[in-house]
Amino acid sequence: MRSVRYSNSPLLASRTPPWRAKFLVALIGLGFLGLVGRAAWIQLIHNDFYQQKGERNYARKLDLPAKRGRIMDRNGLLLATSVAAPTVWAIPKDMGQRAADRAARRPLAKLLGYKPEELEQRLAANDKFVYLRRRVSEDTARAVQGLALPGVHLMHEDKRLYPEAEAAAHVVGFTDAEDRGFEGVEKTFDGSLSGQDGSRRVIRNRLGEVVEAVGETLPAVDGQDLRLSIDSKIQFFAYQRLAQAVTQHGAKGGSVVVLDVQTGELLALANLPSYRPDDRARLKGEQLRNRALTDTFEPGSTMKPFIAGLALERHRIQPDTRIDTAPGRISITGSTISDAHPHGVLTVAEIVQKSSNVGTVKIAQTLESREMWELFTAVGLGQKPRVEFPAAASGRLRPYRSWRPIEKATMSYGYGLSASLLQLARAYTVFARDGEIIPVTLQRRSEPAAGERVFSAETAREVRQMLQLAAGPGGTAPLAQTQAYSVGGKTGTAHVQEGKGYAAKRYRSWFVGLAPVSAPRIVVAVMVEEPSKGQYFGGLVAAPVFSDVVQQSLQTLGVTPDLAVEPRIVARGSGQGAVEESF
Image (tube, rainbow, N blue to C red; front, side):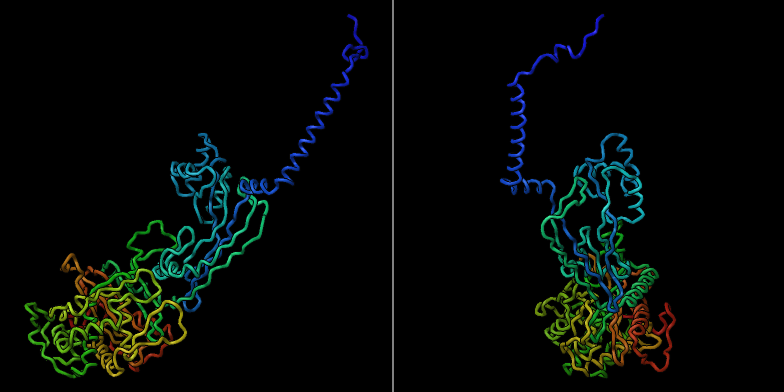
């Protein structure tokens, strides 16, 4: 077979027509001109339109979160602060939906506390972005990163920490998932704590990563720090001592309030049950209740000193006025009011000391209903406290014109009206401040508060001496005494309301008092709810808590002891020397 030389190939020998070459050159030229024209159209003529369209697809407004302000106690110790914490998020469409992909996500579900099907449901909610778990621990974040799953990413958000945990939970409160105040002072002062978020416009790639900043940046304004009146040492001790009492007496809960009578500052406000603000997975509704502010109850015998003080102020009686309480009961329009034990003839001071219902009713008979109502109103009963807390209760105080004789009588010893423990503590500042009552506050206050006069200084001092008798031998609360400071106060015990009446064997026990009697610095109020292990009188259940909290608080505040000789302290739990309270 003879070979053919390429140089002699017919294909090479054929010639391309000139018009075809010109056509190809023209076609290429027109294409180039089209591209140039299109580029000019986009870049020069309609640049703004396409710029905006591109930004709509890839540009985003990126929030610059303001750092939330810290919450501190009166001495600068942290009660709440923010730290950066990892958040796990995902782009579900990048994660794959094959059986092998879902199997690979099982370790992720376990790490984040989900069942596998729960994680898949979460991913199905949005194919572009979904939070998987916010503010996880660093260990969890490292473990998630180690899985190296496609579409799973980490970023950092601020996480709120609460160093005092359960002890200050009802004071401080907590924030929600978006770092907004949800309870306590976190909610009350959310505006100043939050600050103001900033923003900037950025270009992000499909993974959400910022690749370019565009436009001006509006800087964030961080939140302001907040300094409270709370003393962390007093707060922690009050909480711990209350917890001991609740356990000891099998109670449902309780509260302690400590007030500085010079400034009106709240030094402690403790409640049980409580919760951990930074661990709310098993939180129950009743744990959120700030019982000292939201729960109201009939104050019982703690109102008797006010009736004695009012009658003294109106010159209807004197401290040594003798009143016959025999035979230990009195009838008011067919209803009988009784004492726990007959006492016979008592002075006004002894009526307060021994907590005689009959004697108190006879003192109230020297007063008009209007006078009693005006006094109760003047000390803040029936009114919402002006304190920096959401949901503080006002209690109940009906208009005096509607009082029947039996209601006037029972109100004299604390039945037929209601108040919160905070209201009761504030009311007792009238005796501690020589007749003046002051507003209370949860914010640090450097200057003494201005007071409103309710009693004369003489009347307040006379009642203070009666309160000291009530907290001593022969009174209802000798267990309220301390080793270094003189104290005065009044017990309260009441049946728990049930339906339209009272539960036969369910009680609230409390004690409200002041110290030192010679120059009062604090008022302490203690309430124990439904003790169930036999003892229920306020002098046996609440008074010992008062004693320990007073001792610790005054030492913490650096108050000089006013007792030259250590008094004899009745053995705790015995109740020896205590008079059984009438309620």
